[in-house]
Structures are given as C-alpha cells and as structure tokens.
Length: 241
Ligand code: FPP
Image 1 (tube, protein in one colour):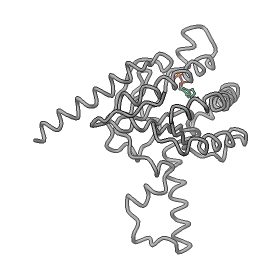
Image 2 (image 1 turned 180 degrees about the vertical axis):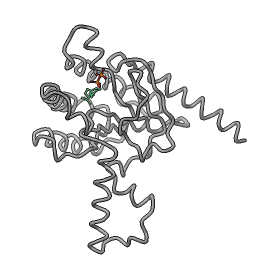
Image 3 (image 1 turned 30 degrees about the vertical axis):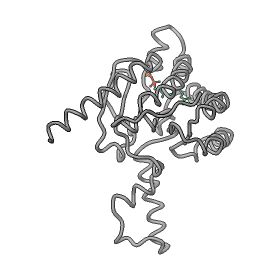
Image 4 (image 1 turned 135 degrees about the horizontal axis):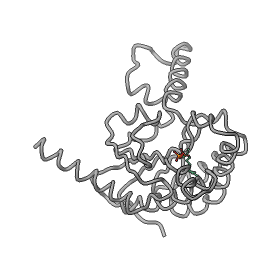
C-alpha cells in the first residue's frame, strides 16, 4: 500500500549517519558484519516511517571514503551486503513508491555493484513518494573536490564564465544537486561528529546525536526526533514574531 506523505512544516529532508553496528555486534559476541546485517534491516523500517512523519527526503550514510581503511573482510562483507540489499529490496521499494538515488564516487566500486545501483535508480525513477538517497563511497570533501574539478573543466572549455560562479553554481555540481538541503541530521551511537557527511549541504541543518546504536534505532525514535525538530522550529518562529 502506497502511503501519501503527510503535509507538515518540516523537516522535509532528514539525513542519518547510521553508526554503532560494530559495537552492537561486539556486545553480542558476534562479528562486526552481523551488526551491519542487522543495521541493513533497520533501513526498511525507517523508510516506511517517512510518509507518516512527513519526511519526503531521507539520505543515509552507508559507506564513507574513509571506510576503505577497515579490514578487507569487513569491506568485502559490506560491499556484498549492498549488492544483496539492492537485489532483495528492489521490488518492495518500487511498490512503496520510493525513488532511490546513490551519491558518492562510483569509480572505486565494483562493476556488479555499480550496475545494480544504476538499475535501481532507473527502476524507481518514476516513483513519486519518499526520495531515498544512499551514500556509498561518499565523503563531503571528496564530493566538493570532484565538483570543483568539473566546474574548472567547464570554465577552461568556455562552457562556464568564472565571473558568474556563486554558491548556487557549486551546488549544481554536487552529487546532491537534485536534493534540497537537509533540515535535520541524526547520528546514532553517541558520537557527536559529522564525519565528512554533507558538510556543504548541512550548513543550516539542526543536529540530533542519540545514544541508540543503529541496529536498535526504531521508527518510534525517528518519529520522536522529527517531531522534536518541529517543536524547536515553532519556538524559533514565536521568538521571531
Ligand atoms: C557504522 O557503524 C556503519 C557503517 C560503516 C555501515 C553502515 C551500513 C549499514 C547500516 C548497513 C547497510 C546499509 C544499506 C543501505 C544496505 P560502525 O561499523 O562504525 O559501528 P561502530 O562504530 O560501533 O564500530
């Protein structure tokens, strides 16, 4: 059943740093990948909570440009998890009217994974419900550097007048160019860091750092944080008036 997205006064775009899978697994005496699998199952629940919460855009940090420094076993396990996740969730995402996009540099990802990512983007391109953006091999500084490189190439080729370059120009070159800026950024697992996630885009975002480890993060907690954002926003409006 496709749910309409509830009209609210925000947040329209929520971004999440899904942290704590490793600790969650360690607490249970299991390998870290066990935690990542449990974390992947949480993604569906949060996506499904978006329409009722009034969230039209959800962006999740699945793998950073720094995560390659993990052991070969963990990196290979995560890549295999992404492939399986995409293959397994494709139909459900489409039937729930979820439009999926990926951000990050695909150059270092294996061809099979990139093909699945392209296919899922294409397959859900006509969906009009929640916009789910999954960041894989994503780093904000890397994204800005890639954007500036293409911008400079366009300027050198005469396609762009350097005198016209402003904030909006750079925004158009970012991986996120079709998305609005995040209104709320959530990080789980008690760490109060941004870790190179959507730095440019989150200049005016509200932040929520919660202690819950990602595999325990529930739709109820997500909805509570979204409602908390609205309460904060309304107070701000009252002060301004
Ligand atoms: C951080 O926890 C989590 C990651 C680096 C991977 C995130 C991946 C998932 C939630 C699952 C897959 C997602 C999709 C879209 C299929 P950590 O390993 O840094 O945890 P720790 O800080 O406790 O060690």
